[in-house]
Image: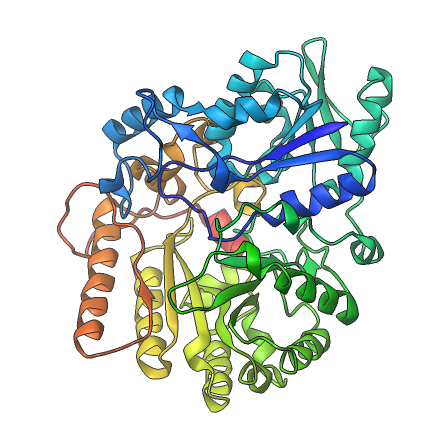
Length: 510
């Protein structure tokens, strides 16, 4: 079969990471191995036009790039989305026997528009959805799009099996992990088991030869998939199912990625980025140490490395010293809260003191500058007191250790414990938030954190902004990323009373 693989690009506050969508290129190599002809239309290569024919080259409503949307912005952006033309998508689909589209929840509105336009030129071509949004919401995804099938979870085994079954409609019902439409109804086949460690080892290397030339300055490597843990805000489809490649397989994947330097665009510094896209690089500390030890001997001239890991791993291990021996750019750790109570409710298995000990270990090894601490502001159980504990803590560690700080307001995503328990938490929003652009609106903030007023959020934002300005004036070099500003204007005060969550909910979180 001729298979077209693609993914949307978001037109506002793009979460485009500067990395190629590794899932597309990994799946492309699997399909090639199965004998299919594969075309990848990378999101960076999508020729998206506005209704007047001009290219969409920058996020729409750029005046709002650092803030949330109000109702007027939502209406304007929806008009833009409805009028977008995916020019080269139509051309690429002309020869396809099947089209596969991967999308997360933020991209979903644009995936819908892409599918509508595909139907206008290829009314009979089978459209297969994959990615986090369709995995978590297969019923809604099929009901609110022109797609025919959903591949839930890992696609490397399920997608080829579905392609074999599509010519025989009865066979589709025998493919685990597939949801599909039949006679106006959505049918869900039993779930497929996740790709195991042995299967991960045997996967062909990603088809990076299909990368568009010069579109990216970084490239990704997957050494492990999933996570051993189950934080309450996390929407990773494979929580508690961490699977890792061996050290030798990881080395092979790294060498493969480095061999495609010629596909990447030059950076001002002359360096390229190599990102380990694992949800948790340190799921096995000994394995992580072995990989870092090998990286310290590899020829990485002209490269800078990025990791996501848990903070605990830097304690009682050689990881800080090994990070010092490689060209480390960022070692991101999700801290989420500066309050022990907040961490406990989020099921982070962390305390403030443990975080400080981790940073002490990184400082002693001379790599504190590479640490990036990520915080989530406004989780459903947050109140002004816990928010200020977080703000105070991140300012202290920023000043003391020179670490980078990344702030974001909590945004509800399908698949998390919070999503599944949103009624209990007083959150009155569902999948419809992603049928438009409501997910990045001021109203969405109010709905997902009912205990915080806009004045409180403005107060936190202004407090952080004031700190950042003072730190900049004092010559601090460490990055301190502010969260988006709430829309509108409000006095930056923290005296507003927050509503309380039901006692039953709070007690169940403690």
